[in-house]
Image (tube, rainbow, N blue to C red):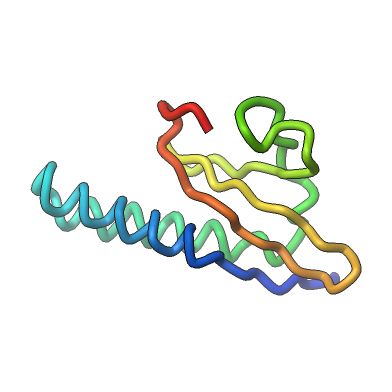
Length: 100
């Protein structure tokens, strides 16, 4: 089984930190924040195997541009696969209610 290298963009890292901060400080649920962000990270790292099995992004700013999406609870992880160098680039992590 061929593995892909998973790269998380600085923007996506900042968004993941923002999710953690929002749940910890606004909703006041630090344990939930930790669980959710750990789940998102785990699911992102799982993209190292069979990333092409995920849905194409068909709406929003990334639609029709060879991006794929991974759904994690109420969040969407949008990524692109580079078959030449076998990498997966995570470009953004957004709440599903946003128009992305």
